[in-house]
Image 1 (cartoon, rainbow, N blue to C red):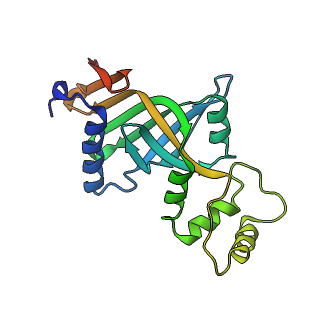
Image 2: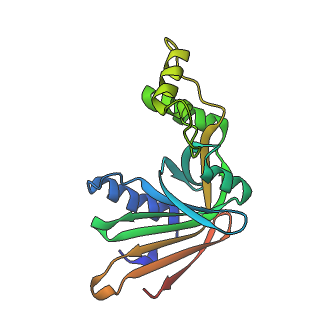
Length: 196
């Protein structure tokens, strides 16, 4: 691949993402999400990329979780996808907004029932006191027995709208290739090659 001929980072990402999927990599859609508190204290965790387009990269979570609280207070994040078998990684930095209710509902309805129940039962990032998670699951199963599980009001998607996207390709002798895209306008990106 000739990095210097690439002008659209989303198209390049799509190409790399498909290659990762076809490589047999387990959880090829997993990515590290880093957020920070208003005072700048960082935290990272793994989430799953559930969609992407020119608007950004989407994941879903509990809106009461630590990550959500940090995003609501400081709506910036970075993502890192790493595919060791391909010697590739993609770093994304951008602003975060909530996905629409329709987007969250559409995705929630594609989840299996157990995952839907789990979304209702888990008070994500809160200490478990008294009843166990298994007890909470039983309560939710009884509550929605014989009916579809609705989208919880405290659960949904976030979209990271990229300002910077860096593609890293491993090469022999640690002479890796790094291509950085930086957004200049809505549909305009500047590019530069970085030293490894």
